[in-house]
Structure formats: C-alpha cells, structure tokens
Image 1 (cartoon, rainbow, N blue to C red):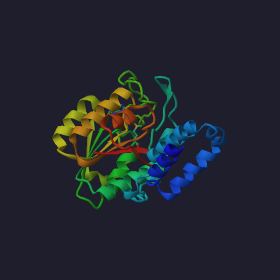
Image 2 (image 1 turned 30 degrees about the vertical axis):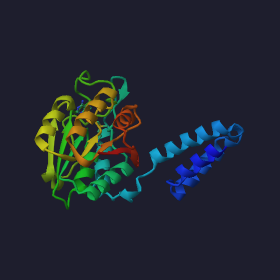
Image 3 (image 1 turned 180 degrees about the horizontal axis):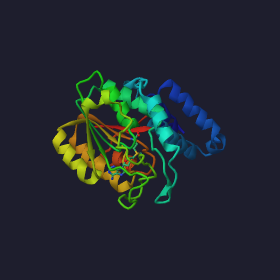
Image 4 (image 1 turned 90 degrees about the horizontal axis):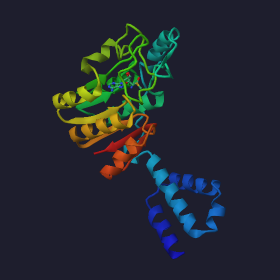
Length: 273
Ligand SMILES: C[S@@+](CC[C@H](N)C(=O)[O-])C[C@H]1O[C@@H](n2cnc3c(N)ncnc32)[C@H](O)[C@@H]1O
C-alpha cells in the first residue's frame, strides 16, 4: 500500500487544484469504490485518469488565449445563406461548410496574438473561418500566413482525395477563403493544390515556421505526412496545431514518437517543439 500512496503523492504534487477535484470527481463517479477493493486496480485506474486529465488540461502558461472575433458572425451568415441551396453527397458524406467551431476559432486568433509569429502555415481553408481567425490575430503584427487548400465544390469531381476528407465543400464559383474580408488579405498567401505537393514547396519558401496548423485531409497518412514535414521546418519553441485531433490516432502517435506532451486548446490539439 505504501507504493500506491507514494505514487499518488508524487504525481498529485503537479496537479492543479481544479484538476485535482475533477480527478477526484471522476474517480468517485466511475465506481471507484468497487475498484478500490483491489488496490492495484485502483492505482492503475487513477494513473489512467490522471494522464487523461493532464492530456486534456489547458497548458496554464498559455493563459486564456481566447480572443473575440470581429468577422465571424458575418462570415457564418454568408456561409449559411449559400448553403441553403447546397445539398447532396460526396463519397457518401453530406456536403458541409466544414467550418471550425467558434470557440476553436477564438482560441486560434488569441493564440496567434499570444505567440506573435513571423510565419504561420495552415492547410485546409475551405470557406475560410480558420484563415479569417488567424488573419484577425495578425492584424497588429508583422506576420505572414501561407494557406494551402485543395478545394472541392458540389460540381467538382469527387475522386481526388484520400479518406478523411469528409464532406466539406465551398459553393460553386467561390474561391477557398471567400469569406475573408479584403482588409485582412494583405498578409495572406493562398496556395491551391494538394498539400502532399504544395506543403514541401511552401515550407521551402517560407523559411522557419512559428505556427503550423493542420485542418486539411484528416487521413492518418496525410496527417503524419504534414506533421513530420512541418516539424522539420518549425523553429525551436514553435507550435503544431491540429484541428479534429481525435479523428484518428495520428496526432497522439506523432506526439508519442517525439516523446512530447500533448496539450489541448479548446478542441485543438497542440504540440510545442
Ligand atoms: C475541414 S475543411 C477546412 C475548414 C477550415 N479550416 C475552416 O475553419 O473553415 C478541409 C479543407 O481541406 C481541403 N483539403 C482536403 N484534402 C486536402 C489536401 N490533400 N490538400 C489540401 N487541401 C485539402 C478540403 O477540400 C477543405 O477545403
């Protein structure tokens, strides 16, 4: 029993007060009384819950990164209006605007403001919500954004994507990022094409990258490809952000291979080089 107690004390020392209570709550909720009849089981259960909580904790030194978005409401209204007339499926998936959730977009803007990057690279623009958020975050900064997108529209051929693409489309006759206001476009470079071919070119051209954001094709292969390449070009202390990081195990596997901590910013997965 002394082993179990010392494990708990040592590891609990690094848990914040609120995390400790969340942990305690989960521990008691999930029938821990039953589990506790077997001390070894109780300890492995607690260790598992502990690592889950640490994984999903916001990294305290980022503070509250959220920053309110000036153009989000208007952009979503424009997208909603266009999508009233869009219905159908692509590779069995219903057409969708594929937009980043508002809280994630707010975190993204705030994080860009916090990091004050010179170079940001993102993959996956679609209608442009994440792009707009990054560019809003850059408004007062000397930064540049490279965005790569291989767009799909309801009229395009559906064969060009691997699995993990989902049904995200832009309306016919619109360009990727069409909701990004003119006033935000001066720091923006949009590169059209498959990330598989465009990302290596962009990484060569952009020099050292401060933040890389993946939101293109969430196939395991594509995510791993983008993460490995981006990691090479990220500066020491730079950040890799992944939207939908729980879509498959690529984000988690990559972090484990590098033996680095996974953080969560809202629904975004975050790694620091
Ligand atoms: C989920 S949407 C991006 C949503 C966007 N980040 C936002 O917040 O509004 C994914 C986008 O990535 C594009 N895409 C998918 N596979 C790609 C690939 N291999 N290379 C480049 N873009 C790709 C899709 O066509 C789509 O425009």
